[in-house]
Length: 259
Image 1 (cartoon, one colour):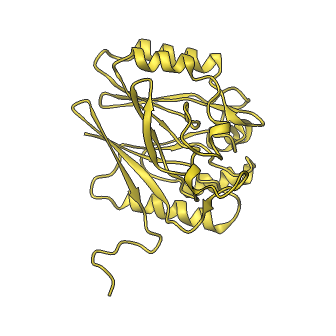
Image 2: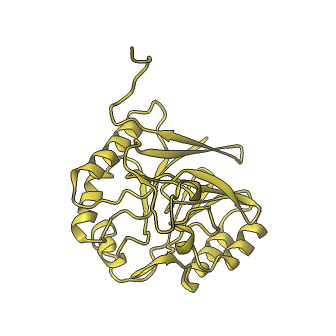
């Protein structure tokens, strides 16, 4: 079994609240009887993209296992690189790959510097096609990025989703090794379909945003800071993907109901 933990939208903002929430999630993962092989964080690491926010992220998202971080629309590539990818300067897309026990993660940068919507640049598509060409025929591939490539019934996120998903849809539909596409951005855990494969959207560590049926009026943002942080576990056994949404109580584990 390969076990992945997916976090998203931590929005470090120099305040204590989001640091505490991220640290609680990381502590939960560290205490598991069977720990993940890798942790991925699918974007909006920082809230304003400042260097100091990435320094907060670096301290809070510490683990003795791989932690793979993607940019989102709130992130700044140059500042992110300077803190989280030392020795890697510049503003080019931050694309990465990681392989473990027959599973390959393609981590794609869908951010557009200075804009909230998403775009996969030609460089990123070339990165993905080269990665797939080199991957073994029996590999399981998961594609991760920040922006969902289809509408998800969110009045907040749908106008700023991925703007050029057509080429990605062709790639996903045409490669049986691709098991799913993983994203963040929505601040809600949900599942739908994209190009005939599961599209799995991670909830936010920092807050929850309701879908269109929670929107009271045009322009209303149904954001809720009350829920505890959540994550998704992705388990791959014999080529089969199972995804579990898991809230993490800020108050800790409760093994029996409270009176």
